[in-house]
Length: 245
Image 1 (cartoon, rainbow, N blue to C red):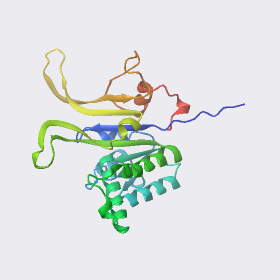
Image 2 (tube, helix red, strand yellow):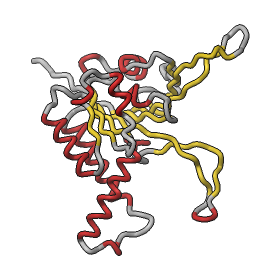
Image 3 (tube, one colour):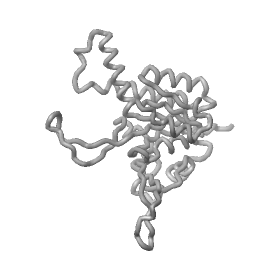
Image 4 (cartoon, rainbow, N blue to C red):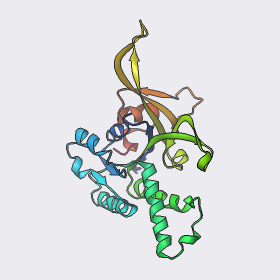
């Protein structure tokens, strides 16, 4: 009797400052579909450069309804897609919040909405999207998370701390299997210790369910070139037949 190998769709969060290469790396995953939730259509230029068939893989959306419609289009052509990229997850949550408030308004219950917003109901909307991709469609899911200034205090008493923190979907902290922080660094000549005028992309592994951080197999940093194949081979124990690709 032949036992079918279960393919494992990956949920990966890619974090970083602008121009760190988040969308670039996401588009290197197998057969991507990019749902662009940003107001400035930030995935557009990257996809045009990397993918010859980008027009059929690019889904700019303005609200949560259009996100569902994009997923239905992806579902109708499952052969073409193996990875769904949400760029960005913070904007995805904002769209979920806007829809939740609109639903309450239509019900005449906007006064029942507590402030700060009851995000558990918004999070349920986001989780339904994740489940649709990972469970129903059996595709890889990538959340792209930007960075923002950290503030201390509230309201008029809030002050910047000078630090930068992740701006993404909070539940991705524990829902994702792998979290990667991308950064761009100037290369240094090891002999003179002077900057060479060139740059390299470094990927810090923030979380990895496939490796024990205290084990000898843990790999905390990957350097360029970064590819889907390297992420799979160096950060997981998955074999070819177990990977959605």
